[in-house]
View (tube, rainbow, N blue to C red):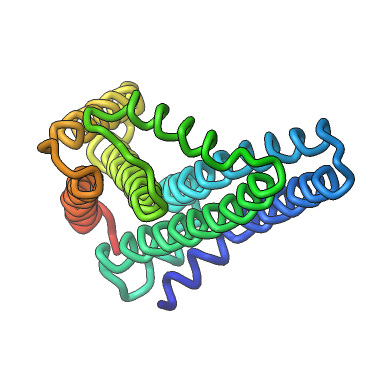
Length: 246
């Protein structure tokens, strides 16, 4: 918990900026809705969509940037001098990032549900919106999707878990570059190649889940992502234990 608090202090600023931008977008949306100004309403919707995507994206990316600084600059000296092993140090980073992504996802999902219900009740577009989402999901999924709030929540969870596993693989690539390949001219290129290769394999295997009920399909995908995250977390910690002084 102490290490997680330390990680949170290093990554709090982008989260605050995301909340402020969300608040601005939400105010524009509500003003447009209350005053029946379609241009302002659509601007608010567009801003909320973009802020949601980039906020969740940057929460994960910021964790990787902090890890890279900890491994390659003086910023991490005190962290690696603490009486903690690599599993605790990296585990705190991954847990803090995972909790932040999960809470961020729940927050934006709840906000979207409230805003959509507000607009749908007034404009009578709820069913058409559900139909549009179903068509989009069916075009991206090998199984038939009949959308419900439960299934939508499971799909959102799967997306968040897949993003977290991608962050863990990214952390592995950074640690690999900073340990085994340090000082090599091609270290960054090889690390990036390994990252994309593992990410492709992970997505490929997740897409090969047996067809069946949609909720089970997406839950199985989540398990594949979690398995990859666990494996590469352990590999990362072993590398840190063997190659870094902690």
